[in-house]
Amino acid sequence: VKQRKEKDMPKLINKHFGMIVSVEPTEKTKNDESWIWRKDYEGFIGVISIYESQRLSRGQRFIVMNNDTRYIRTGVGKLTYTSILKEQFIILETTNSIYTIKLHI
Picture 1: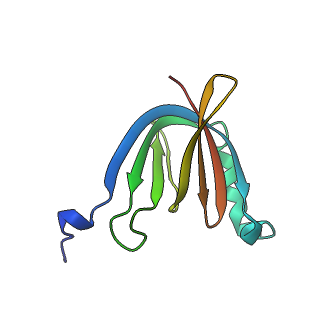
Picture 2: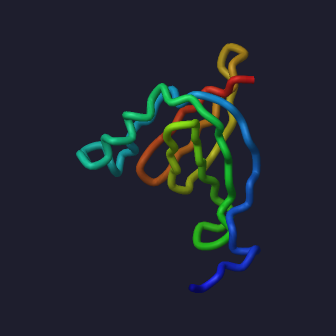
């Protein structure tokens, strides 16, 4: 088994607690029926770990979100923080999806 070097491992950037408010397809996947499983994660509440890729998509971010019973790992993409009416959100736009996550602070 080939071991990965530490410099190749994703870098943990931040941790939060929150809820996936919405998951929408990008233009690329709007007519792709295999995309729809992601909608099942709307309303999902858990710990949000934000990572930065150190290898193929170097510098891009992805999210691993989990609770006691399930988890989701997104693809890499562009991550931004935003505020709407004093509430904090993460927006992650990947190749296939746009995730909106409300942070519980």
